Every structure is written in C-alpha cells, then in structure tokens.
Image (cartoon, rainbow, N blue to C red; front, side):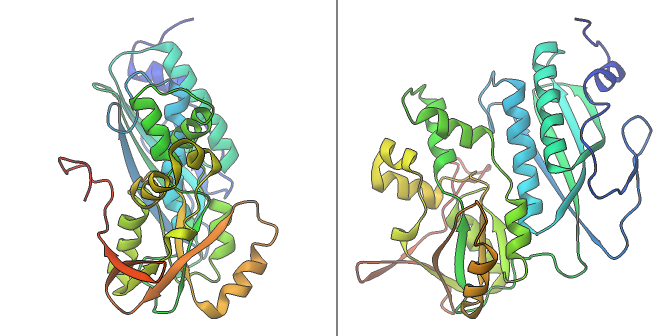
Length: 327
C-alpha cells in the first residue's frame, strides 16, 4: 500500500469522495479553495462544530473506524436537536503521523456513515500534531421552525429518546478494561452514537424545546430550563435504562449514570400536555423509544420526586474545564 506523505496526498487518498448531499445543495466539494453551496429556497441554515481529542474524548489507540463513528454521530446529534435535515460537513484532522491502516479505517467508516445520513464532506484541513479532529456540520430547517432551548413552558411534559447511561457504562469498561456479557453493547453505545434525526422530524410539530444529551441529562436539561426561565420535576423511576446497564451495575448506579453520565447523544425535549396524545400517535410506528420522565414547572431548579418525597438536585454533568470533569 502506498502511503501518502503530504497534505494533498492525504486528501486525495482518504477524503476526496466521502458521502453525498441528500438536499442537492452542494455544487462543488473537496478539491478547490472553497466549497460552493446553493442553499435551498425557503430554508434556514443551522451550523454546529465539535472537536474530539485523543485521550479526552476517546482512549489512546482507538481504531479509526470507531473514532469516525463517534465523531460524525455526535456531531449530527446537534442537528437532530434542532430538527434539521443534514446536508454537508467540513473536517479538520490533526495527525501525529500518516498511519495508513488507521486512516483507511477512519475514512472508510466515515464514508459509510456519510452515505447513511445523507451528508457530504465538502472541505477541511490536515496538519501534524496530537490526534485531534474538528467537524463542522451544516443542515437545513424550515424558516423559524428550528427547535430551540427557549420554548419550554410550565406544564410541558419532558421526554427523552432511547436509553440513558449506556455510554458512561461503556467508558467505564474501557477505562478499567472490564470484560463481560454486557460490555460489547455498552462499548458500542459509547463509540457509535446514533443521531436521532428521524425522531426529531417526527417530534418537531409538537415540541416546544429540545437539546441533545452530551454532558448528561441534568446538565443539558438545565440548559433548557435556563433558556426558558422555568424549572423541572423529574421522576427517577421513569428514567429509561437498558437491560444491559441495569444487569451490569444495578439500579442505583444505572440511575446515577442516566442522570449525569453524558455522551448518550439522545434527545431531551418538551411537549405541551395537550399535545401528548398527538405525539404518541406520530410515534406509533417509530422504532426509537420515547419516554416521559417529568414535567416543566414554574419553580426554578430541578427536583426529583419519588415515594412521596421531593428534593432538589444540582445540574451536574461533564465539564471539560473542571478539575473533576463535572459542573
């Protein structure tokens, strides 16, 4: 195998033809000084950027295909939170060396997922240094219809998609080199987040606010509460936890990771109580579980209610610039 030794060779060999734009807006992609985009008529653009660093966001030595899955899945989750249709992305890759095996695995998996989600790589940059990847995703929404964090109102029901805490469990198995029956599932949930793009489009007509769960349910729900100037009452018994996580660590730890673990990249959203039946009907044939876990209140803060008792809880979650990694 010939190994590219310069930036242009890397782009040619690994990143010149990744994905396709399902919206038809890309006129010119990789290979020129800039990409050329023709925005669809009557659409707003939404943009988000994420960076992942080896040793911080994934363990040192992680294979390229797993890094690609984690990178693109997490980035597209931001578009799902806004109920956007993905269109294209740019990618900046900092590499310690030109490892052909790692690069081929990374670019091949990236291309597979880009085709699956209908996004096209339209440009980026490569340089030498500690393994770092920055991805900027772009999508389209109907004008003034993007889901925001600021629309929740007292009485709205609080919902989450999928199950929570799995990614934190997967990380634990990696950090402690744990093996067992549940480990493959949990590590898959860590490395291969599934952006809830289809779910977002189904809930969009009913949702008043939304966010994706990257820093932990409590921390991310608190962003909605701050933006909407409301509070929340949660029922811990309703938190959706996978059988795999429950059987591995039990109820108490599962619940704690569901509340604060982070990086599940599920959606948390609010819906007026009167629209809950319509939401249920819209999701009747949908394969992704959606669970009501509480209600928006006028009282600021987050409270847990269980067995007739109510107590406040801090909006704890992951924080890159905290010594302990939590807010």
